[in-house]
Structures are given as structure tokens and as C-alpha cells.
Image (cartoon, rainbow over all chains, first blue to last red; front, side, top):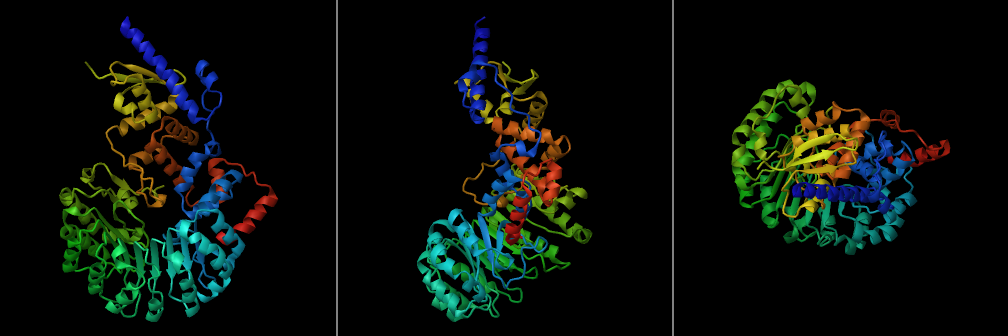
Length: 425
Length: 166
């Protein structure tokens, strides 16, 4: 009898509690009526539009900028929801630049940005408004003479005010910079010092420009260098050194020219920036990091190490290279390594995963199937030795699944194997 | 004594008897159980829910499938949603794509939201986003049966204004 009574009590309490919880979520004001009367069912959801805003925002978060552009003109509701996302990240392309915003030309990098293009009627007033009213966490800042003249007024008023509090990552493309560009950068020195993430594109930038910018990025923690120099040697390092305080730098991304062997450069970089924890190297598929360099990297106890291969350099032998490289990395970096990312396409952000991204053209698959299978087999056999590995993502899983190439022991990664489903239909 | 079972009752009276750990995939239910007994669950318990039976059935199916899986904690500091690892497993994909009508999918997302099952909500949102990917505005309207409520003037103005973004 007592037990029954207890049970009855439980049920009653739960009923009331659940009602309150659910009702609160629905933000209905008449709580009192809800508890005493029979709670009403949530209205039937038969249409995308009838989902609550908070859920729609979550859905929009999963889309890249270009899909959001299509979605925003569906109707007024989506327009208002999408605008927040669209204006959160902006990329300003100079008028001189080719239309990179075209969907087909869109690279992985640019899908994360909304491209504002002067030539395509991005009114500068509009840009100013964006900068002022939205939290612009990422700004791509392409420098060229033409462009700087166009945005001069913004530079003085809006940009400098906004820099400190809103910009988390700044990309400066110095490839076509002129002396006047350098001068205006110097004027913004105070603001620039506070920026923690900087990407510098330095191809053919005269060394004396770099020297002029001494100390300009002293607050940088995460640095990305694009070094397509005609000659890569230590002198570049010495000149770039004056730009930032090398002790502060924890993350370094290097874009390496394909024509040159730059092992020495990598070695001097990590010696030069002793506190590096995350190293990312973007390089050509033909470039292989030799074993002794890998061993040296292992001594630095990096937390993350990524190698990003450019997709555009297609070669029949590249998969072989990648496989050897994965083996080499895992072998030489030892069991402390938490992340290895090998990309075959341009861009990645801070992944907490071990990624092997193969963007394989379907008709190429047969050619390389054997080597992919052998990589999977090798990983299957050896994965136990790397207890810290967190994730392993295989991006060409569409082909994997189609062709029944399945990894067997990947569950050992604590159920955290994720296949990229984005391309599945 | 056998472990106490949790009975979930749908709004239309269907009952689902599940293990406690399956039910506790839902934070809402978990709190309700904690609220009911501070020392843990000692007897069977019945929890009425504001969810239709056919929807609850699918939610329970999902929770059963993932009852032992540990999901990574969502990282609040992560600014960029696109850099998160893709979350759809093959099973998830099948679960959402093959078994449902569209309204069922939305009902499940709503249920996941009400019951506070973060991972299911995440998976659901990803699925909807994947359906949208690569579609034109017209195709999205058609696919999800969303009417266009812009006036012709508004639409023209937006198209003009948005030219700078494309």
C-alpha cells in the first residue's frame, strides 16, 4: 500500500515537474493554468518555417555562406535570421581581384565568408554599417593600391575603432602592397598590436617593407605565413621576426612554396619560436618531410601537427606519399601526439580531430583504391598504439561506403569516428 | 532486485518502458528523475510527456541506439561551427533520411529540443542543413514548402542589394 502511495506521489511530482520544464521552454506566461489544467500539446510542426527561431539558427549555423545567401531570400523570416550570419564574417576583395565569390570558384576558405566586392556594388557605406553594427569576428583584408584608396575613409574612422574589440583574425595580403599601404598600416600600429591571430601573405613583398613594419604585430599568438618567396632562406625569417614577438607565438602555419626544399626553414622556425604548440604546414604534394625533421618536431612535443596538401597539384603517386607520411608521422611523433591532420584541400581551422582528408575525384578512385585500403589496414593494425588520438575523419567516405571499403577497428577510438556525411545524398 | 525501469507515456497514451540510462539521454527526464528521488531511482517510475507516440517512438529508438556512446561536450569557445567534426554517423543518416516524412523530422527536432537531448538536436539540425545545401532559393521553397512572403518590391530591392554578396 505504502509503495503504491509513494509511486503515486512520484508520478504526480514528475508530472508537475515535467509540465513546468516543458512549459518554461515554451515561454508561456500562464504557468498557473498549465499546472492545474491538462497541458496542451505543442502545436503540430509541419513546416520548416514553424520551427522556433533558435532551432532555425542552429540549422543555419551548419550552412556555409553561399548556401545562406540562397536561403536568405526564401522569405522574410529567413532573411532576418540569415543576415546575422552573413554579416558576421566579411571578406573584402579588392576590385582588382577576380570574382572569387563565384560558387564554382569558391574554395573551402571563402565559403566561410561573405564576400563584399566593390565592383559588385558593395556600397562602402554598407560595409561601414556592417562593421559598426555587427560583431565581425573574421575579417579578410586584401591590400592593394586601388582598394586602399576606396576604403580610405573607413580606415580612419571605422576600422580603427573596431579593431580592438571585434576583430579576432586578420588577414593581410602584402603581395601587391605599395609604400602607401605600408604607411597606413603603420598608422594603425596601436590597434594592430592587440590582434592575436594574423595571416600574412608575403609573396614577393620587398624585405624593406617588412623591416618598416617592425613590432607591428607584437600581440600575435597565432601566426600564419604565406612564404612564396623566390628564395626561401633564413633572411626572411630575420625580417619577419621584427614584425612580432616570437616568444609569444603558440601557433604557426606555414605555406611553403612547392619548388623548394625547406626543411632547414621549418627547423629554424621552430627553434626561433620556442613556444610553438601547434604547427601547420601547407605544402605541395611533392614535398615530403624527411624523417630527421619529423624526429626533431617530435622533440618539441607539439600538441597539434597538420600537413595540408594542396588539392590542385594532382599526381598519381600522391596517395602513396600521403600514406607513407601518415605512417611516418605516427611513428616519429610518438604516442603523445593528439592530432595529425592531412588535408588535400586548402583550408582548415582549429580541428580537434585527426583528419585525413582525401578529396578524391570519383574517376580517380579506382587508381588509388588499393593504397587507400592499405592505409586503412595499417591504421587498423596500429591504432592501439596511439591512445591520445581523438578523432579520425575520412572525408572521402562517400566512395568508401559505396565500395564497401570499411575500417574495422576504428571503434577503438572510443566511438568517435565520424564520417563526413556532408556529401551524402 | 532488477534495476528500476522508466516508463515514458506519450501524449496519446502510448507507453515505452526503457532503462534508466536510455531515458537519461534526455536532460529534462534526467532532472525529473533526480527531482523525484534524491537517492537515485529505487522503484519503477512513470513519466508523462507532451510528445506524440509515433515521435516518442523514434526518439526512444535513437536513445536506445546511443545508450552507451559518449558524445564530446560541445565546446562553447569554438567560434566556427564549420570546423566541428561532422556528426552524422551512417546510422544517423539512415535514421533521419529513410524512416521519415519531413514533418516527422521536424517533430523529432522539436522533441529533442523539449527533452534537451543535445546530440539528437545537433544531428537533426545537421540533417536539415544538408538537405538545404546546394539548392537554389526556389528549390528550398519547394523542398520545404515555404511560401514566399516578400512583396514584389521588397524582393526586387533585396535582389538589388544582395548583388554585392554574389
